[in-house]
Length: 68
View 1 (cartoon, rainbow, N blue to C red):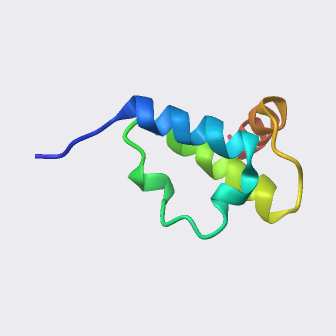
View 2: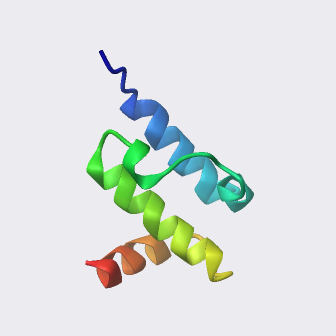
Protein backbone atom coordinates (compact mmCIF):
# COMPACT_ATOMS: atom_id res chain seq x y z
CA UNK A 1 0.00 0.00 0.00
CA UNK A 2 1.23 3.48 -0.85
CA UNK A 3 0.89 6.50 1.40
CA UNK A 4 0.33 9.89 -0.12
CA UNK A 5 0.31 13.21 1.67
CA UNK A 6 -0.88 15.86 -0.73
CA UNK A 7 -0.76 18.50 2.01
CA UNK A 8 2.93 17.78 2.48
CA UNK A 9 3.45 18.03 -1.28
CA UNK A 10 1.78 21.46 -1.33
CA UNK A 11 3.79 22.62 1.68
CA UNK A 12 7.06 21.56 0.06
CA UNK A 13 6.15 23.43 -3.14
CA UNK A 14 5.33 26.55 -1.11
CA UNK A 15 8.54 26.24 0.85
CA UNK A 16 10.60 25.89 -2.33
CA UNK A 17 8.90 28.97 -3.80
CA UNK A 18 10.08 30.89 -0.72
CA UNK A 19 13.57 29.38 -0.80
CA UNK A 20 14.51 27.94 -4.22
CA UNK A 21 17.70 26.47 -2.75
CA UNK A 22 15.48 23.62 -1.56
CA UNK A 23 15.33 22.43 -5.17
CA UNK A 24 19.10 21.93 -5.23
CA UNK A 25 19.96 18.36 -4.44
CA UNK A 26 16.40 17.27 -3.66
CA UNK A 27 15.83 13.59 -4.36
CA UNK A 28 12.28 14.37 -5.52
CA UNK A 29 11.25 13.61 -9.08
CA UNK A 30 8.16 14.69 -10.97
CA UNK A 31 6.73 11.19 -10.73
CA UNK A 32 7.09 11.20 -6.94
CA UNK A 33 4.14 13.56 -6.58
CA UNK A 34 0.76 11.91 -6.10
CA UNK A 35 -1.21 14.79 -7.60
CA UNK A 36 -0.24 15.31 -11.23
CA UNK A 37 -0.69 19.07 -10.83
CA UNK A 38 1.94 19.10 -8.09
CA UNK A 39 4.30 17.24 -10.41
CA UNK A 40 3.73 19.79 -13.17
CA UNK A 41 4.36 22.66 -10.75
CA UNK A 42 7.54 20.98 -9.55
CA UNK A 43 8.75 20.45 -13.11
CA UNK A 44 8.14 24.11 -13.95
CA UNK A 45 10.01 25.15 -10.80
CA UNK A 46 12.95 22.92 -11.72
CA UNK A 47 13.08 24.37 -15.24
CA UNK A 48 13.03 27.97 -14.00
CA UNK A 49 15.58 27.29 -11.26
CA UNK A 50 17.96 25.50 -13.66
CA UNK A 51 17.78 28.52 -15.98
CA UNK A 52 18.65 30.83 -13.09
CA UNK A 53 15.28 32.55 -13.22
CA UNK A 54 13.48 33.67 -10.07
CA UNK A 55 10.64 31.53 -8.79
CA UNK A 56 7.30 33.15 -8.23
CA UNK A 57 3.79 31.80 -8.54
CA UNK A 58 3.21 33.81 -11.71
CA UNK A 59 6.51 32.66 -13.29
CA UNK A 60 5.64 29.05 -12.51
CA UNK A 61 2.19 29.45 -14.12
CA UNK A 62 3.74 30.97 -17.26
CA UNK A 63 6.29 28.14 -17.43
CA UNK A 64 3.56 25.54 -17.04
CA UNK A 65 1.72 27.16 -19.95
CA UNK A 66 4.84 26.94 -22.09
CA UNK A 67 5.29 23.27 -21.24
CA UNK A 68 1.70 22.52 -22.15
